[in-house]
Image (cartoon, rainbow, N blue to C red; front, side):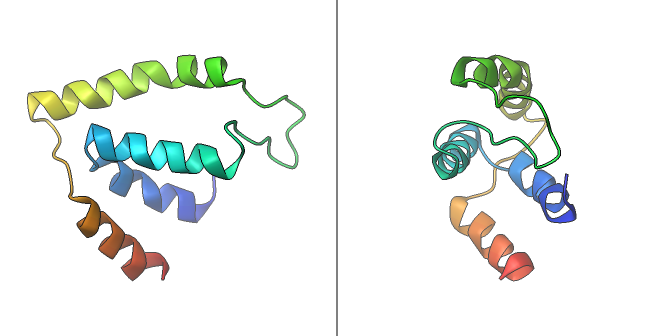
Length: 88
C-alpha cells in the first residue's frame, strides 16, 4: 500500500459508520464497483459479493467500536478539511 493510502487509514478510522459507507461508495464508483488489481498482481479482482464478505468482519468491528464509545466519529466537513490540508 502506498504511503498516501497508509496516511488515510487513521482519518478513515475516525469517521462515523455512515461517513465510511459514503467514502466506500465513492471509492467503488471510481473503479466501476470493484477493486482493480495491482499492476503486478496476477489475481482477478474481487466480485462485489467477495469484496463485501472480505470487509464484513472489519466493518462490524468498527461499528461496534463506535457504538461502544471506543472510537469517535469526525464530522464530514472536518474530515474534508484535514484531507485538503494534507493532500491539497
